[in-house]
Image (cartoon, rainbow, N blue to C red; front, side, top):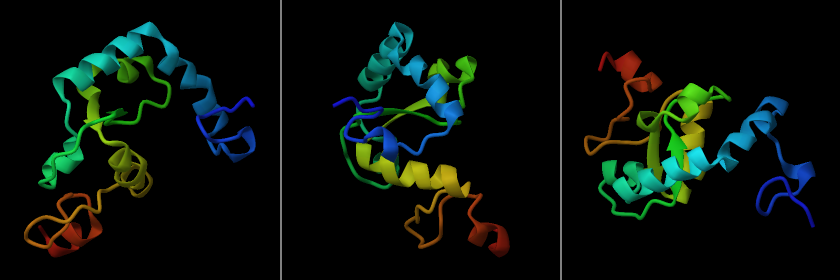
Length: 122
């Protein structure tokens, strides 16, 4: 059975036409090499580390969404290592909302872009 994403049939894939067009970048040798190097140089999930947890990274994420821009896509500095849980939940929520919902030790949201921080003058 052919699928557009592992475990997701074509009728369930919610990606835009634009996203389908740039998926080919993930199949290039250049991306595979960059991905492998990122996971070797940063083997732990960056989000988990920032929250005091030690979790092996399994995914290479683009910090600034590339939307098909090859310069952003292949920019090593625009990548970070994440575990699949953080990539599939926290990171995608952040991209959708425009800010991270992570809470710091002081009980306040850590992201300066969080609406609470802008109202609180933090």
